View 1 (cartoon, rainbow, N blue to C red):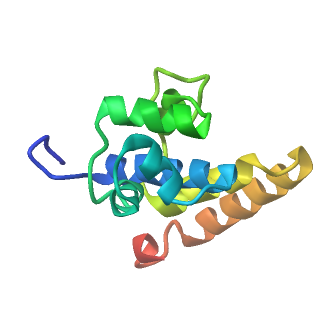
View 2 (cartoon, rainbow, N blue to C red; view 1 turned 180 degrees about the horizontal axis):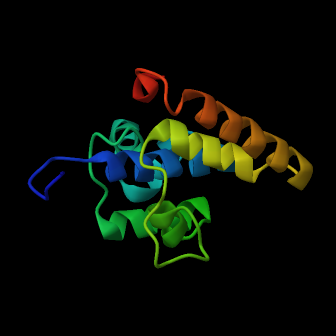
Length: 130
């Protein structure tokens, strides 16, 4: 279990991924938020990759610059402030992000596909490595 003494943890990676996704959706380079915050684009890279933890005040300034809520960057949704994000790795976060952008009929098909894949691999050896 990660502790506060650790430099970063999985949640820092997830938050960084949401920052990156928000920045890309806004169509801005890493330099733009860096200039706005008075830091280098390399520091933005470290935040986005989860290599450096983002201070809460910095997270709010990044959210304001990208015109998203800080709650979205922290929790993944603006409507569910009480729950921790379900996805704690970048592949899961990306899958949820992509799924949320699909039309309803495509979401159903994608969920059925994921469910079938899960059921097919649930009892298989090395299922976690898949």
